[in-house]
Length: 277
Ligand code: ADE
Image 1: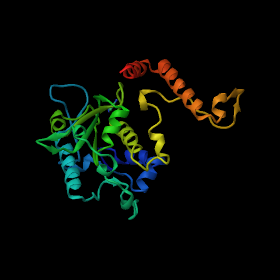
Image 2: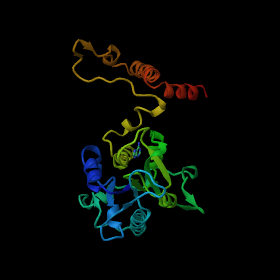
Image 3: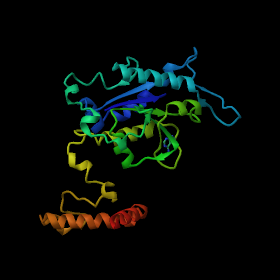
């Protein structure tokens, strides 16, 4: 899967994603991430990309044209299969054999007709996610939906946001990572890339772990323990040492229900309603 992050801070994004599991996934060529600097598409000699807001108001707004030109450049490259020499990406570090490991979205997950929500006149539209506190709150379900894409463009705003007219033209999804306001869309974009990438086969060492964890089945994950058996006078629950798999599964399920009830009553109510169905 290929991520294209449109941002004023490409280094920040790449540095944040270059380590650990996502870094290894990039090295293996399971995912590609390029960060494209919107400032490279400024159309004035000062490389300015923001301006005052019509009607007044504090702060500056990112202008439509640089964002649009940046998007057009990314789109053209995707359509022609070329890469951008100016963008910061992991392409250079992925070896030749990485391509062999890379799998297409349609190979990974069969896309049903219902999944194709971004069509215009029957043609599939490039998915462009704008990170904004005014978006739909990001969820595991949304991550699963986005993981079906072959190409995903993420647009990070700064200052007071981006001129509405370009958003109307290019954005297919507005995503918020929660009801609070950050200084820009970079951290939210990194969160989306992380949550989507780990769903791609091969990215996690243990493929089952993406399935059996918090939010699958709509429940939070049960408590887990590792060695030693006793720590600060706290003993690992007996059932987990019993080797009796059915009892372990039952205990974990009960714990997941109890934990969800206590910590996320909203999730528990939904789970209880779904279970009744
Ligand atoms: N940009 C600023 N705050 C944000 C948030 N909460 N979610 C997504 N993008 C943002």
